[in-house]
Image 1 (cartoon, rainbow, N blue to C red):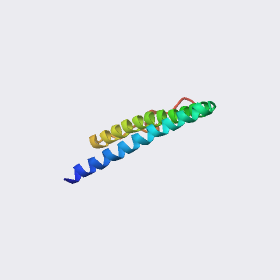
Image 2: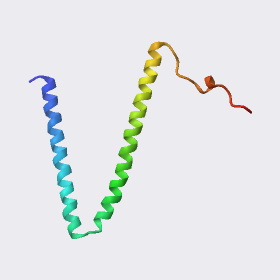
Image 3: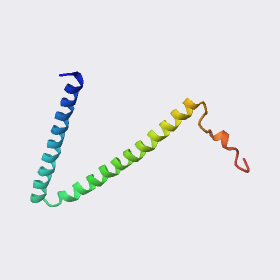
Image 4: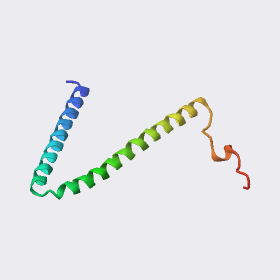
Length: 93
């Protein structure tokens, strides 16, 4: 096998292991919730927190990657990105 095939197989095995771990975790939480229903509130709070973190990560990641692409394009074309000083002054300053 080539290096790419070996790396691809290793990545696939890692993803399968992570998926199995996630399924096992959800099943264990479900079993714990059957015994202690209050745990669903804790799971809900933790889930909302991680959901908000994931949303921010995705939004900032997309925004930052588009800003970096724009900056790289401007650098290659020879134009400089706009500065605060290029926008002019506000009246009264």
